[in-house]
Length: 624
Image (cartoon, rainbow, N blue to C red):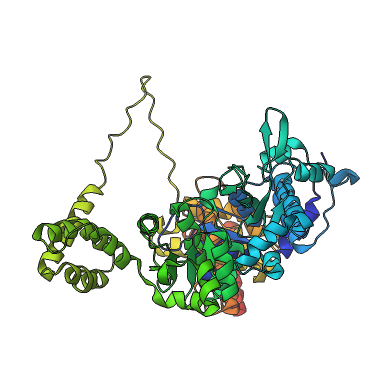
């Protein structure tokens, strides 16, 4: 099978800004000269440790150790092959790839074919909305305040009643039935394959980059015996707990907001209504309750900003209250503030816009109450607070909610101004109960006793020690180690701005710490230290268990006022390494001259080498 030409692989990576690609998934903030930081998309964390260096096209998480270039990121996030990652980025920038052996572009396979099938289906459904048969769908949308422009903006489409309209259209475009089955676009019955969506209005469900993963469909006709809403089944692309409808449209305004705000609504039409009314940060879950995976997506978008807001809109009925409590459980550990907004008369955003206009939808944000306060009220609602027993029961039910507040000042305010007032109880009693719950939770969360070490093998051979990831934080604080650490950091990050001969000479000198020496060897092995991308290749070539350390050196914060001062500092560190080597060689020669006759040929040669070292050191100092 033809392979993409290496020159094209390098060119695409050079043209793509890794910060733009990662920034579509992760809220990135400045973290020093040439570095950005955000919450890691590969593991759950409360404070950001995911660093991106756009200048070298590399990322690294100081928490979990994940690192790589823009291709690695796409492969990890979207489970793509290397070829698919290159092809996606090439399409993003409009670059035409060339394949080795002069062959044509290979057939796109795997996940890329499923993406293509979904995109083709979305376009086909969209065009069907304009047909005479789709009058019912257009009337459905119109009755909810959505005109043709709104439908086009959200990509709304229509699935005809027939059994194979989409199937026939997409097979004519070259998609196989197996591909359409894998994409969840068709179903398999006793009589063969048929369209999954029939006689319904459809919304394309897209990922954060705008690629269609699946569809949500609402029935329109009374003779449709299926569920009111029918979504794409779980596929390799579509995981309902890992996608939020509308996020592709909302992400930009979320990241630009002051404060950053995400509005979580309950349905597709609610998202449309909010966006059209001016609340352009609205998103919705797709046929499932809001959960931890959804919160993980939002946390990466809003970052660790304590001023950010997540506003949930729920119906005031029992189901809505239960949904709010479930959502509250998902917001634990969230740095942002969470709120609940309930529409007047229980109206959801779509109905609110229809009955009271766009301004009423925007005003909904002014009615929001803190999530903690809302959940406390739900916990207390089942108790008769007019009785002693009811107040005690209410306190025991609501105290765990307040106990979860991490900020002691905020927690005390909720104890005094919310819980104590609602219960009509003494603030001291409320405080003691909250603290009792906190102590109990800490005890329950205490780590278990460390397990005994593994027994030695029966043959008496020693147990291999576990591989320990070496990190910047684990390095000794000795001055010599710090010099080597800083020098390598400067070489990897600013080597392209250091005199090539100076960099080559400094990188050839052995280092005293074994982990840093492993990184130095990889740097020294690079044939052309002025070539773009060499530092990423050098990091990738470092042997384990030191590769993660190399990634930290490449992405860590290099202290300097700006890029120019950073480059000067990196050059100075190179000179200091060379000077250290010259001083060590001079000490050896001074010791050697004590052991040989001064007037011998050997003695004269040693003195000559000493003079040469001194001259070389002076030249090095003069160049600084």
